[in-house]
Image 1 (cartoon, one colour):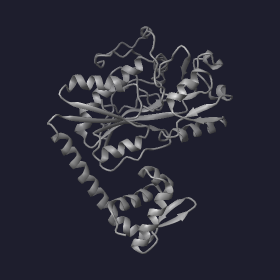
Image 2 (cartoon, one colour):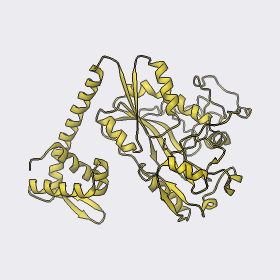
Image 3 (cartoon, helix red, strand yellow):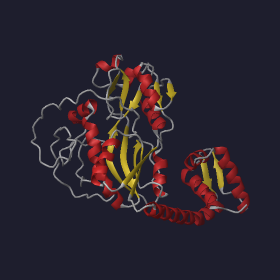
Image 4 (cartoon, helix red, strand yellow):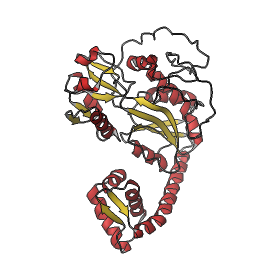
Length: 388
């Protein structure tokens, strides 16, 4: 057997993840198939490349030698394909292309609307996926230009080499959705122990979702019954009282379904956008940021959380859902990898409602504002966590 790039990519995936199971999932194949492929590769090179241990796979001395030559080849091949695909996309008919990938988010409609108005001659496409890691890989491979994804706390994403990222929200609290007549809805904030007798539903195909929920339930001393399924199904079962589920704070309640924050905000996600270049991030980030806060303003539960001071404040007057509820003095308007670190005056945390047309640019008085306006009846929403 002659070694091919796909074989080298498999070796790199095993080394990076330290597990045949995780590597197989990353490569989109079954573990038995990857195990068989590894045996054939080892036979071709004449020796064992990984030592199988209880804690995972560790490269042998021969494996380290092979990997040192394989990694540059894989990177170069990825760069070749990325450049070729990007060139082909631009050359089809001369129309500029913007290929966006995203995990689920209520900010998506507003983001696309804003991009359409600002770049009227650009053809924008959207690809949704439950796997943030898969979307990041597609950006690295040149199949997408931008990926807007969420990273579940405690379950870091694998950011491919060469990608630039910008953090939209460092820690977005995850809420819980439950039937409107659930006894816990009598409280403004729900404790996990209030849901001890409930069944939970989670989508295990969402990167980090099941691991994150398990950790939170375990730390609360709970071991509830859990159903696995997609979040569209979960929304139906929540409404009938069959299950409860984690949801985005931007989710909007319905007559048969309530949305509540969890006491102590035990589960959070980081929202970030990634691209191959800083210029590509600059081209879309402002519209995404405005769309996110527009969606936040449409969620009464999230507005209450932000107005309660748990989201802190930002220099532009908008709430800032950060991990410790305080502004850290580093904001430069972008939250990116190259953000400025020079301290600025700590702003007064002034709760506001976010306009849907443009960001707030004028200083706000340090006085308690009027309650947010009535946003009217909310449409049915996909309560997939972020999930963005």
